[in-house]
Image (tube, rainbow, N blue to C red; front, top):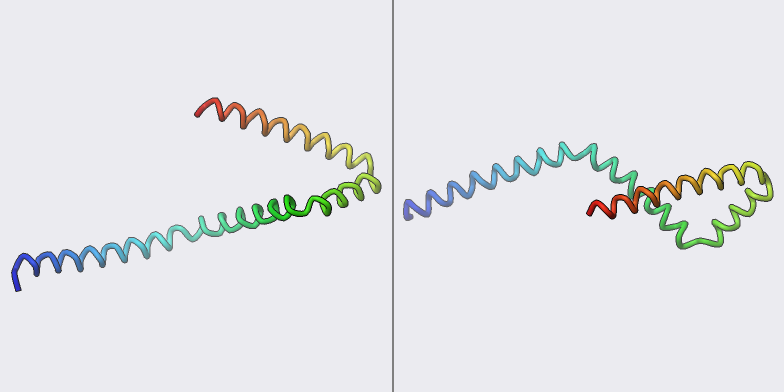
Length: 97
């Protein structure tokens, strides 16, 4: 066999071993990130469910308003202020781009 081909095959094998080691280490180091991302996926699935079931959400809100109107009003005010703050942050971040 040509010595050049033998050298290339040896380097190729060494690189494959190095890549396999890097993949293994990356998998180990990304385990905490995987759990955090799975929690985020769960939240997004819940938001998606809420978007696809507006009648259920409206019924739950109506039940809370009928059962405890003061508490519902208090949470509505808080929600409004959170929403307005989010809108302000989002608009200021759009100006940064």
